[in-house]
Length: 251
Image (cartoon, rainbow, N blue to C red):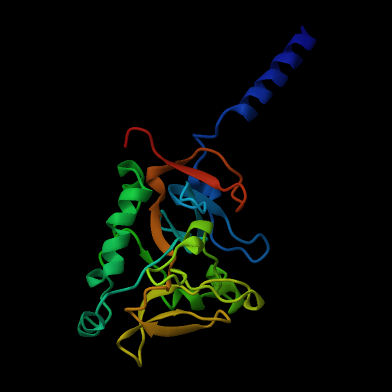
């Protein structure tokens, strides 16, 4: 009998290890930790491979507070200008909601990247919508892991790097190999001294500015995930094996 109980216990433990962790709570998500680094989670999918084959979007968790996770795409997903005319950007004093970038992220990108249930897991912020960009101030926050210029750098996906403009130039600007091959990307912040421009990353990872009409600047989306609306269905939280966020069943 003792041997039978031992075997049954071993079987139960084996089965529990094999079952998907769909009931795991979201306490496994956390912000930047100096010793342990970042936690990563997937939600939605977007074109990734060079031929456009999609892959789950890997989100880097910057902060968890008040029942939400503030996340940013690990990769630059696409090139896109902030707006086609800098005068509305000037007149609105940098209102992100009037921009083509806002329309793209909360329209075309949303339709391709998320199911309705996944989209409903994102917080609809009053000023930036559900899908937006980091601010320039975010890139100053050591508590988000942005302690150095190097920490600001991000790389385009194979698909983003493969795209071309009509003139044959790369659609997404990439710095040369000697600089690391990373791509510059926008923030949602207007330049203080150059109202026609938005803040963005530069060659060495510093935050500078460029005119909002520039087309080959990168788009690295950010959002707030409502933790009451997701379950964690697997994964280890690493970049290679991120946690898998799924909408709570029945919501």
